[in-house]
Length: 163
Image (cartoon, rainbow, N blue to C red):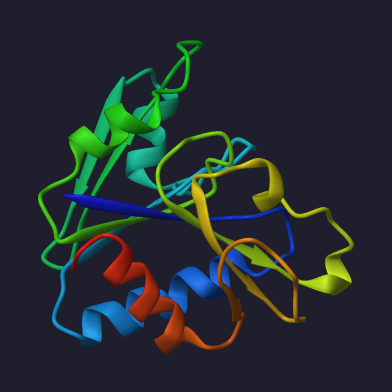
C-alpha cells in the first residue's frame, strides 16, 4: 500500500484537507483508508453502551459489529502506543493510506499551514515534507499549493507516489 501524510500544527487545516483529499481521491476510483494520530486519550466509545461496559470490565479488545460497520477497540492498559508501521500492517489492503499527524515520521507528507494559527513551518527542517498547502504565498524550496486547491494537491500527491 502507498502511504502519504498530512501534517502540521494544531488549527492549521489538517483535518479539513484530509477530508477533502479522501473525497477527491475516492471520487477518482481509488480505495483510501486513513490513520489519525491523537495526542490525547481519544475515545470513540460512549459510556453506557454495551461495548463501553465490556471495555470498562477489562476486555483487552472489543469488536462492535453491525450491518453497516465494524469497529475494533483495543485497550493499551499501560502498554506503549504502537508505532505507525504496526498500525499500517493492521489495515486491509487499499490503494492509499492517508495519515494525519505523525510529525516525526519519515513517510512522504504535505504540511497544512494557516497564517492565522501563528505557528512555525515544519517543512524547512524536514525533507520528508514534499509540499506545503497554505492560505498565504510562501517562498520555499518545494511546491506550495493553495490550501483550498484540493484537486492540485491530490494531483501532486498521487503523482509523487506513482498512483
